Amino acid sequence: MSNEEVTIPLEVSAIANKGRKSLARAWREHLGLTKEQVATRMGISPAALEQIEAKSARPRRATLAKVATALGIKVEQLTSSVLA
Image (cartoon, rainbow, N blue to C red; front, top):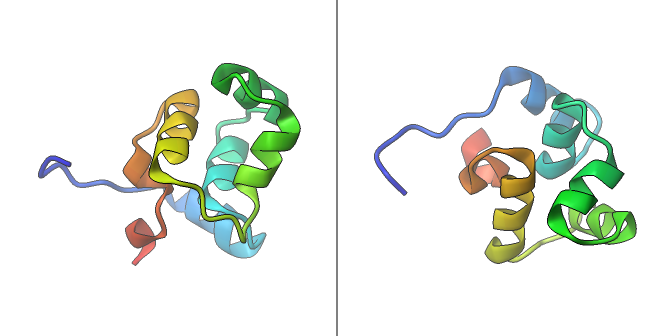
């Protein structure tokens, strides 16, 4: 990662915290995308995306990279360390 600061919008953080949702789901909702749209971009089923987006899920970095690409964001914006 470069020295560039990685941030997430306050709205995304609020969606994640208020709804107890994963950052992946909060980003998707913030961007106004459906599960079907993101799943299609990733080449997976909506059910598979639902599993990735589960609050309790611990997807591999490679999976997070695919989600980030589908959402048009940086993979670092999907990690909870950004919220610290």
